[in-house]
Length: 444
Image 1 (cartoon, helix red, strand yellow):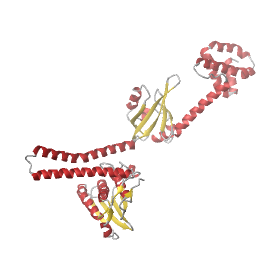
Image 2 (cartoon, helix red, strand yellow; image 1 turned 180 degrees about the vertical axis):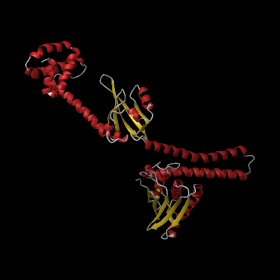
Image 3 (tube, helix red, strand yellow; image 1 turned 60 degrees about the vertical axis):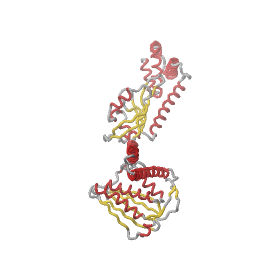
Image 4 (cartoon, rainbow, N blue to C red; image 1 turned 45 degrees about the vertical axis):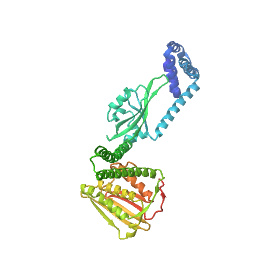
């Protein structure tokens, strides 16, 4: 029986030693081929017990010694089979622990090869994000196939000398639907300084990007709101300065009055913005006064009639028979806030409606509260339903209409809700009829 046959026979009888025997032989043969030849001439003549009791420790021990000698920069040298086995078990355990951590991460995690970018590992979150049921369905696939623009990944890796870092790209799912992804990629370097793979995490930031876009639109809207009155003040001031000698006292007074009213409106806009910020931070003090909420509602409806006619939408207003006219005339609150509330919600309903649709407004009374309902036939998009009253969630000019409405209702100690379905959308809210002179809103 040859030396190799003897080894194979031992390995077959002791399968757990196969890895160590093979490893030991590789280490001996790689630098001391004459030892292998010598063993091949001498060892085949020995009895089987010799192989089991001496050959295995010899092969593994000599191989271990030579391997340890070749990496003398290590702090600890492996000198026997037990220690080698312990190291191997620790490496396996370390790998399993790392994969367990990646598997349980609340974000999508992965590892890819450096040659063709194949997915070496994918956790369940990544499979879910890409529209698959199990990670095994995507492991082995080329990650570049998930990029909407494959050149994004090619350019990303070719331009990187250090760690790749964080980037935003468009990716596609199994059903070819696209989403914006924030990708954090890191190079994995071994002890010899060699790149062995890439690993990273992916986050779907589509909603975040939409929120940023709405926020930018809001900022532009706010700037536009200030630009017009500032232009008025600038133009009239310039006119007075340049044409002062030719202007009559009445013209100068009229121009100054316009400047005064415009600046007052700007101050009011600033104060309104600051008040809403105070509501957000739970320190707004409500200063209610008695006024006719019926007149305020009707004034808001009248202000929106032109907009409604442009969209070929009608507004229907109805008071419940239970409503006490005196309660409507002596409502306690901040009139401007309530008017803003009506303008926001009714305006949103008009904007959402189609031609020949009807926006319906109902007012009712129950014990100490006035109840309001604003209905339109449109259905709220599913992506807006979960946080309908959230900041920058609506699709109007600023994205703040429903958010500010919620703040105003809660500042008046009321509650607001939205219900949408196949038959349309209804915004309902209640407002207490009587409030104390000062009330502090508590952020929920």
